[in-house]
Image 1 (cartoon, rainbow, N blue to C red):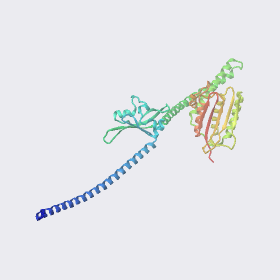
Image 2: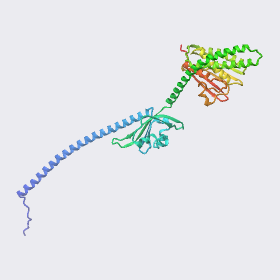
Image 3: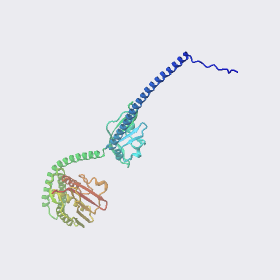
Image 4: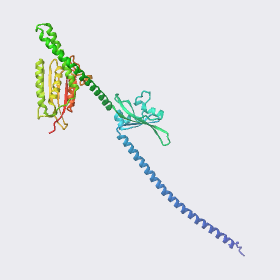
Length: 418
């Protein structure tokens, strides 16, 4: 029995050529894809290189910005002027070290606080920085008063500016301010010096004009006293007139001394020697007045040589000692002391202390002013002359006092160099 065979397809030439064409086309496409892939790989590599460069540039830029920010922050913190910045909602965003030192507010207490809560309003009823935010215009250098944290007013000079971004949008405002309390004090002192100078010139003129008639009046009163019998009541009246003329003459003499420039003849002098001699005169004066005052001399050790004009410094010591005596009408202790000169200060010092009535706090700053006195028969020129003489020696004078406990006046004078 015969087996039937299946028909086997025959690969014709046409089919072979078609298949070959497909393979060749596939191979061409594959090669083209390989070329494109290689190009893409190279492009991707370039993109990675460029991206790495951009990342490095960005990192450098960020580092540079951080350095600039740190640098600017260091500048702000090292400035002697206070710097305060606020944002558009009026809250403080920056408060440097100087601002903290000037106002007394630590930064942590003011950052993110309302500016108007910490600083007073100006005469227009608006704080300076808020005025800048409202008007969009900075303020040129001006002066105002702010309040220190402890409650006292503080004069400052300030200037403000508006802060904007590159597009011109407002970011906030900044204010730079400086403490000018010392400058104001110097201005007041200068004005007072000018006033005192004018007063001195006037006093000198008046003193010269008064002195001649005073001398004539004194001469005629003396002659009149000689003509009156000793037992006459009129002689006592003339004697009172002479006492008044003598007091007027002392006032005029003090006016002339105060109004003239002091030109001391400086030379090295042992401070102990001058104080010892002058203290002896003071003890004689105490005995003459019959007062119950003990003079205590407190110095020992090696001699302290200071640059001085002995005659003028003796006037200083006598004036201070007599003031101390007058402050102890019921008696007490007058101490003349030379302070130790430990350390290279360049100054020697002595002090005159009493146990008298003392000076009130409100009068302590006034006692050096001419014509200021709390005595019924005082001229107010003694201590002014004392201060003028000490300052002419390039010295310094200080006073400490307590009511009903006494007063200490301390004088510093330049030491004489070997």
